[in-house]
Every structure is written in C-alpha cells, then in structure tokens.
Image (cartoon, rainbow, N blue to C red; front, side, top):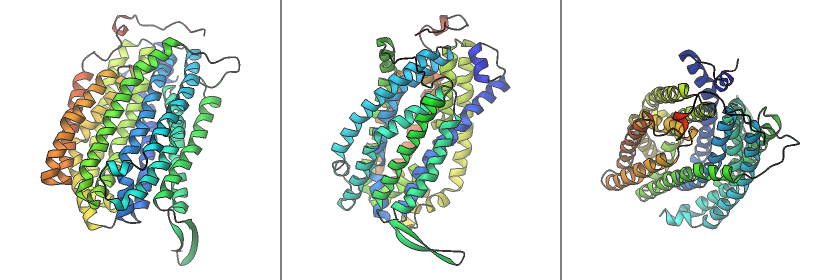
Length: 478
C-alpha cells in the first residue's frame, strides 16, 4: 500500500517506513531543486565565459530577481499548505477548489509584481551602486526576467500543488527537462555563430549573439514551456486535483483568510530575506567587478550544496501537512525531527565536497585568476555553516506544513538584519569579500541554532491539534 495513503488512513508506520516515506518524497524534490540550480549554473557559466563584465551584470541583479520570485512563491504557499491539509483529511473537493482559486490569485498577484519589476528595471543597477559599464546589460536582464514572472508563478504554484498531493515525480522530471531546454536555448541565443571542431570535424553552429539578453530570453522561454506542462499534469492528469466538469469554482472567505494568514508571514519572510540579499549585494558591489562576479558564482555553487535541503524541506511540508490533516499526532513530531536530521546529514556531506572541490567548481565559471582565488576562499568559509543552514531550511518546511509561518519570519528577520548585514558591513570594510562571507557563515549558524530550538518545542503545532483525537475529518461535500 502507498505509504502516504497509510498515513492518511491512520495506520502505524515504523522507523523504516518513515525513512522510506521521507526518501520517496525527498529524492524527486532534491532532483527538482538541484536541476533549478543547475539551470542557474549553466546561465552563469555561459555568461561568465563572455567576460567579467557580463558575469558581473547578471550577478548584480540576481538577488533582485530572487526578491520578485520569492514574493510570488509566498503567495502560493497559503494555498499549497491548505491543499496538503485537505488531502490528508480526505477532502478532495475542497482541495480541487483551492487549486482553481489559487491559480487565479497567482495570475493576478504575479501580474502586479511583474508591473513593479518592469517599472524598476533601469533603476536597480543605479540603486545598487554598481559600475556604470554594466548598467545596460543588468537592466535588460532584469526586464526580461520580470516579464516572465507570471509563468514562474504558475510554474511554481502548480509544482507545489502537485508536491503537496504527494506527486513529487512529475515536478522533478519537468525541472530536469528545464535544464536541458535551458542549455539548448542558451547555446543558440547567448553566443554568435561559430565553428566548433568535434573529433576533427568542423561544425558551424548558428547563434543570435545576444549575450546577457540571450541568457534571460532562454530562461523566460523555458519557464513558459515548463509552466504549460506543469499545468497540464495538475489540471488534467492529477488523480486528486484534476478538474472535474461538475465542480464549479467557489470563493470561500474562510479559505481566503486562511491563505492570507499563511502567506503574509511567508511574504514578509521572503521580503526580509531577499531584500537582505539585495543589501548584501550592495555591500559587495563597491569591492569591484571581480568581487561581484566571485560572489555571484559562489552563491550559485553553494546552491548546489544546499538545494538538497530544500528538496527535503518540500517533502517535510507535504508530510507534516498531510499528517496534521489526518490528525496523526503520533507521527507529526517524529517526522519533523527525522526529516531535519536527514537534511543536516546530507548537507554536511555536500559541504565537505564543496570544501574539497571549491577550486574546480569556481573554475567551471571563469578563467580569471582573481575571481577563482576569491571564489575558492569564500566557498571554503561557507562550508562550515551548511549543517546549520540545513536545519533552518528543513525545519522551515516543517513549520510551513503545520501552517506556522509567522514566528519563522520574525526569526529570519532578526537573523538577517540584526546579525548578517551589520556584521557584513563591518567586516567587509576590513577584510573585503572574505569578511562579508564570514558574516554570512556566522549568521547561518545562528539561524540554524534558533530553528532547532523551536523545532524541539511544540509551539509550531496548530492551536487545536494537540487536543484532537486521532482520526479523520469528515469528507467535505462542497
């Protein structure tokens, strides 16, 4: 029997089955997260081979594009968590209605954020205080990414809804596909027409020669293609969430209020985190183009280290959400602790690999010796923080599955704005890019520690959850 179904039916799960369930949900999630970073890795590598100027222009606005994307992600969270709870409680009609309402809301919200991004596209490089020589490329890259935000919103929302229903495979396969598509489009859009010698045979490849613009266009086209496929599997192929002809969409004030209750702290958290990344970039940008490029490359490389944590965090959101929906008090805390431990173990391993192979990883992006030296240095500093970073990532997935989003947002606000940024500002003056990344390392250790303290308490459980009897909620009729 499907282990998630056993969880929903109230059947006992031993430790082996719990681990099996975690891995069944985590592995596709890890593949999806890693493939997303590989796509960024490909973009950065291809642009990096054009030169330091082009690499710096993309790196400059990377944190700003994350900010817009993170706000879109937050808007979807209020619906995906409710869907997990509804499926866990066997309320499939309610879950399908949440899908329709959520997608409509996502279109409206992402269009609003897109409009703001388009308005700000030529102002961002100036506000970040970068060298004027990279302003044009940075503005163009940001403009195109902002245009693709509705596609990114629906892509992420559909993937999250499929994951919360227990379907981790389809989103992961489509994310892997996106990597191959990204390579294909970048190959022809970034570089000019050129002749390549393969096994002694000269082959001419056509190219648009669009440089930074080509990287952005490639990403945007891939988002539209993957969004279309993701929506197809959600709306027409999903066993529990696909459209039903006789079910009309209806708006429930209670569900919308619950979506807002869950989403606004996540939005605040993402705003806090991503705006802090923007400020961190502003601290780094006066250190020169080599520092900007090394910072951008190192962040992308580090992502390969911590993305497994986000995959496990997604699994934790599904597991905890469905456990709470099914009133499985016996499993909720066990699964919370177990998923966090697994995440910390995996990211400790990836941190060791990152420390050992830092020179080779940074060398994949650029041949510039100064960028490679700086990138290797800061990656090895950051490796020491990864186990604690894992704790914060996976525990946050646990809290979101429980619908507890306000306290984590405050914790992140304190961690980023009280610890990281002031420390980075002070240390960067004295030690340059090395000092800024020492501050990041210290902050991540602090953040992971406070998340573990909260995880081992019971303050993140829903208010009425601890007093509920084991069992299931009645099937929702409408």
